[in-house]
Amino acid sequence: MGVELKNEHPLWIQRLSRFFGVGVVFYMVLRFVIAIPTLGPYGVNPYIFGLLDVITAIPFAVGVPRLILFAKQRENRKIIQWIIVLAISFIIPYLYIAIEGEKIPKLIWGALSVVILGLGIEAFLSVRSKIRAAIREEDELITKSYEDALISEKKNIFIK
Image (cartoon, rainbow, N blue to C red):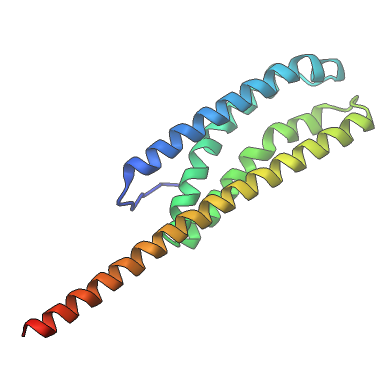
């Protein structure tokens, strides 16, 4: 899946990617530290969970800024591609827990399900608000350009 960025502000996407990437890595390390004592006793190898988390954090950290950029550019096909990448990246570490965690008590599964659902909703709402802000910014630029063109056209009419 090649990424072709058509952005007049490449620095914008780079900064967002770095900022988001740092946040994802911090969150991943926190999850790993919690996973070692929590998942190990139930048959889940926390190191495999951590490895899956590291591997999937990369496309997740890259995907959110790309999704926002392509939403801003209204490229629906690329938006769908990145949503799929983000969903798979988000689910894989938890899927490993579901497959390997046969001994996990139902109460812990319930709590884990609430956490996963909450994180998923939070990620969705955060991305949605960033997309809306980017689109609103793009619309304002288009409106300003249109207004500037009208003013310029009116000046040209009066000059002639």
